[in-house]
Length: 180
Image 1 (cartoon, rainbow, N blue to C red):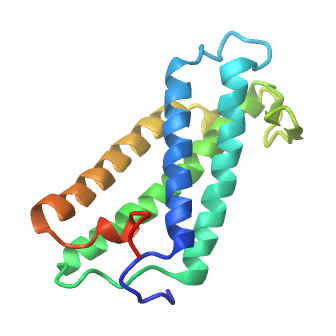
Image 2 (tube, helix red, strand yellow; image 1 turned 90 degrees about the vertical axis):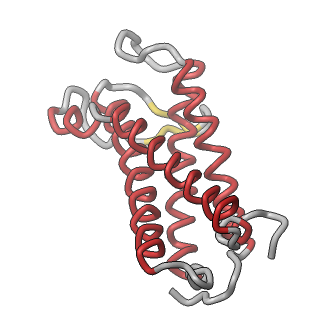
Image 3 (cartoon, one colour; image 1 turned 60 degrees about the vertical axis):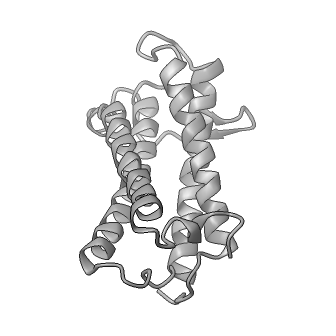
């Protein structure tokens, strides 16, 4: 990683805010939308859920590429090594879970023969044939992956608040939009 500044740059902060907004919206929509097991084709909230999933895939990919190109700040001064390593592992888990969640949802839609569009503007190709056994294996854990991602996000938030409220260091502050 190349960046060794104290704060995250504007690009990293922007990707973080976009991800928070998209995931917040997506989890609310996922919670209130009707079940997809008994529909012929997605519409309304389900179609919006599919579209946001594709946007999340694009933002997550761009965010990861940004992170690889520009790096992350050096660990906060005085941060114990085990906390730094734990943060690295949690960030890795968050990226893996984000990709797994979108791919599993896309697989689920493909396996059921749903046409996925990006806000009705462009059709997204299926990644598995309708009825695909492999698509079922990949797609079925979509909800479970979502719950695991929520738990990991909760841990991420608790860790940030711990640093801000208990340790009084700059770990949380360096990601806030009005800092740096």
